[in-house]
Length: 337
Image 1 (tube, rainbow, N blue to C red):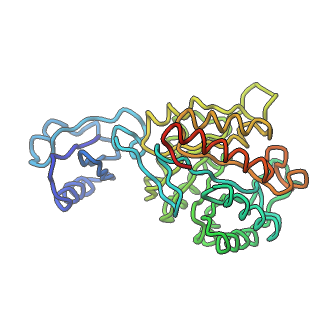
Image 2 (image 1 turned 180 degrees about the vertical axis):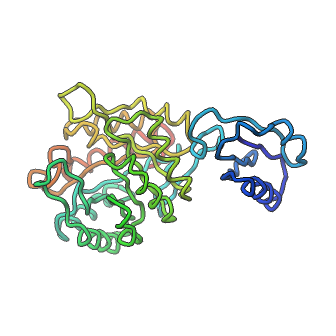
Image 3 (image 1 turned 45 degrees about the horizontal axis):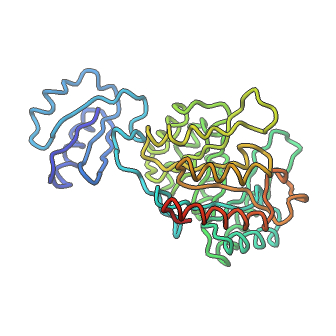
């Protein structure tokens, strides 16, 4: 249930109104928009007399029930887009920040070479896997804590904020200095991890699960927001279908659907979405055209020798060419990369 406040009600009165409902056993979310402020109740609100609640309060304009299971991420609760800013990267409809870097951190030389190159090409954030969830227990599992230290060194030398995947809630202390915590596709419904990541007080990039519906995706984002995370970035990264010519099927229809349903920014990862290097550039152009709020691309200084996902990684020259093309197209749409 949402209570929409009358114009001009001061913050203290809104907070007091929310606390009254919290004392009755409900959780609340206060959403401040450009045109109005709303208080959303989370819990079983079926027994609440909505008309009575409105008429007995002099600060409530009107109320309505939210039919979706997700509340905090719903655009009906928060009609204005949430803009997530991480240093120079701005995730919104006016910008198109690119996150680039290797699937996995392999050495200091490798990550520094890639970081310096992608920054020069125009990337706003550096991605790199320190802990790697792999289908085979014999595959490279990442440099783990040492990999995070190398990412921090790359950030110090280039100024690029870092994005890396956290595998479980016991790793929270290791990720305190990571700029954006990534929750990978395999962990999208690891609810204890979502609660822990949401409580960290930093932006979280949530990837869609391999076989998850968009509603399940949004409900996982709801866990993050209910735990206290305000800056959630949704990432479409392809889903598993019957098609075998690509690693996954990249669902670009998810972008406009999600932007209708939620106020959170939506980005896309075509590298995991296809698993094929030659498809990354054309799909990146489509991702910009479909209205996504950003892009994540795997980039490696020598993909042939990559320890993880080399077949889907662009080399540094290919990435630079892609960025040149995207900048030209973004200008035509009035967006900044």
